[in-house]
Image 1 (tube, helix red, strand yellow):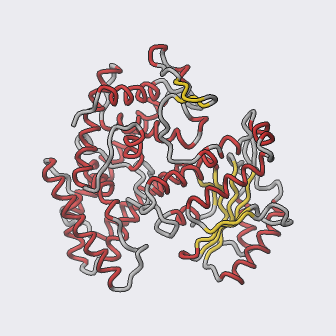
Image 2 (cartoon, helix red, strand yellow; image 1 turned 30 degrees about the vertical axis):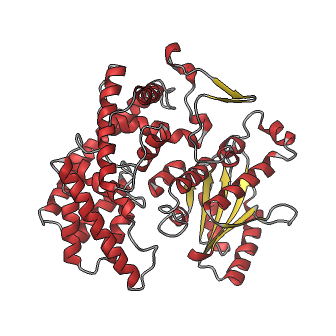
Image 3 (spheres, helix red, strand yellow; image 1 turned 180 degrees about the vertical axis):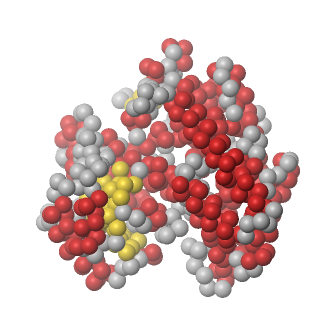
Length: 462
C-alpha cells in the first residue's frame, strides 16, 4: 500500500535534514561522507565478498571456511554491521546447533542465493525460517540452552545481507535501525510474517528512493534511503547530534505546536527511551544549565547522573543497587545478571570534555579490588566487569586498564559513553525478546576491554 501524502511529507522532511546536516569535523558534508563509504562498500563487494559468495555457492569453498572468511572480512571492514547478533552470531548459532552438517550447508546455500522474483524471496525466507525453528527446537529438546538457539527474527537481515552482495540495486539489507526508523516515522508497522515484512520493507525503500529523488533533484538509490534512516536513527541517542532546523530552508522548517506549557513538541514523541535515561548524555557533558536544573530538583548533577545510570541498568533488566551514596570508597553502582553469572561494577563521571582514566586510577583500583573480590567470594560469579560511564574518554587509558585487570578480580574494564548506554536501553525496549542480557546479547559488549560507543552498540545489537 503506497504511503499517504502525510507520510511522504514526513519522510521527505527527514531527507532534507540529512541533506542539510552541518559539516563533519573534517569539513565534509554527511552526503559526501556517505558517498565515500558507498564507494568503499562497492569495492569490497566486487573485490572480496561477491567472489567469496559465488565460490561458496559453487561448492568451491566449504561452509566452515566460508563462515570464517565472512567473519574476517566484516571484522576488518565494518560496513554492514554483520558482526552483531543478527549477522555473524546468528550464522554461528545455526551451524553450531545443526545436527546434520550436510543439510545445514544445503539450507544455507538455498537461503543466501539471491532470488530473481519477490515470490521467490518470500518462499526462501519461509523455508529457511522453518529450518531454523526446527533445529532450534531440537537443540532445546536435547538439553541445549535457549541462549544458544538461533532466533528466527534474525533471518531477514542475515539473508538480505547476502542478497544485496549479489544484487545491490534490488535487495535492501533489512537493518534493525531502518525498521525502527520507519516505525518512528509512522511509515510502517511490521507484522509477525517475516517474508511479507521484508517485501513491504523493499517496496518502501523503492517508493522512498523515487520520492527523495523527485523532491531533492538528486539521485537516491537503496543506499541513499539507508543513509537517511541511519541519520534519523542515530539522533535519539544524543540531542547534540540532532540537526538544527536553522540549517533548513525557511519553507522546510516545521512549526512548533504548543501542547501544554511548558512542553513544546514538533510532533508526537517517538522515542522508546524514558526521559531519565535519554537526558544522560547531556548531563554527562555538563551541558549549560543542567547544574541549575539539578539544584532545582534537590540534588547535584553527579548524583543525578548516578540515578539515571542506575535507572538505565534497571530498565535493561539487571538486579541493581546504588553503592556510592554514604558507603565510603566504593563504585557508584552494581548491576548483576544471575542467569548469565556476571556482574557490573560501575562509576559515573560527569565531564564536559571527556574523562581521563589516569586522574584517580589508584583509588579506583583499590575499591574495585575489594568489591570484585567480595563479589567473587559471595556470589560465585563467572565474570565481573568494571564500567566507567562518561561523556567521552581521553586516549590514555590502555595502561590503566591493563594494570586494573592484573591487580583486581575484574575480567574486563569498559569505558561506556553515555550515548551508548542510551542506545542499549533503546535496543532493549524496542525488542526485549531479541536483545538479551546474556552472551548472545548485551554481555557481548563487555567481553573485551576498552571503549564502547553508539556504533559498537548498534553493530552488536542490531
